[in-house]
Image (tube, rainbow, N blue to C red):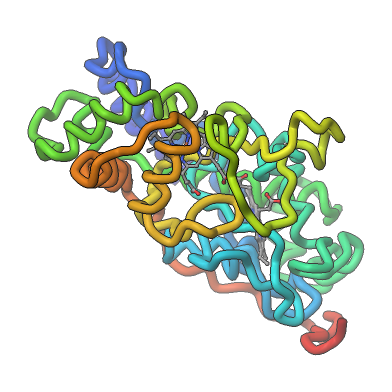
Length: 332
Ligand code: HEC
Ligand code: HEC
């Protein structure tokens, strides 16, 4: 099947669904199904996303920390990197990350492609270098053939590796949540409790930061607007990028799609449950103590944002060759 044949029906369906929409007045928009994908490039990127040979240990892949069986996250307070190093910050989900206005908690990467080079060369994550990653991929005949097919010539470099991974990440959107079905006009898609939660989410002001298709991901905001956020985490947020004191604890507002799956919460992973996260948000961002009932309503609404998870055949990776550098799992 060519790309075009595969794309037309989805695009046509989206055009029907997104015309004259019931959600036009709502601050949250439905997630659109993926369009405009180079399928061969995304297929290659999927392999690379799952390939632990892009790490020094030969053991850690993107999927180790962004587990697509668990909402694209690791469900740990902070991630575990090379040699079991304790990571400094909670791993955000890769689901719908193509909708973020910038990448990382502090926005230090502009695009998914720019982001993907980071973890490979981060000594606390995959602990490799870009040159070594290129060398490994070049030594694997199955990859050489596939890169030639996708890019048209024999060059294999970090640019192309990260471009393919980013193309795969564009496919990781999660349309058709019950909330989106409601937005698109199915009045029975939500329970009374979930609807009450959405109403509260709008009326208490959560939507001033969490809005749009990803219910976040579009702005930086300070953690602790009304009340100070106390944390032992060294993370400084946006200040690490701009150097400005006023940017301390400014973070990219997280996207709340699939938030039911991506516990624990906040940049330091300190909130273990949604109930706790919602209570803290109410108090620190809005100066509002939500009652138990209101909190449960908002949590119920947030759980209705869980969409269809990406499903695909587990990629089978091309085998290493005699020339492939050996992994070094136990070296610093
Ligand atoms: C050792 C765990 C680990 C590995 C391996 C890892 N990541 Fe991450 N990833 C993280 C953490 C932690 C963050 C947040 C870092 C920050 O914001 O400073 C992150 C952030 C991201 C983001 C930004 C999401 C957002 O909302 O800002 C994307 C996209 C991403 N990673 C994709 C990848 C890809 C692609 C790979 C493989 C090349 C990869 N990650 C490998 C832990 C990991
Ligand atoms: C002023 C902007 C702002 C408002 C208002 C706001 N939030 Fe947030 N929200 C943020 C920021 C910034 C973070 C990330 C904080 C951090 O990690 O330190 C966040 C994080 C979250 C998280 C955790 C997501 C994750 O993946 O870690 C949840 C859940 C959440 N907000 C829900 C809400 C709810 C519910 C409300 C209303 C009661 C609300 N927010 C109001 C800015 C805001």
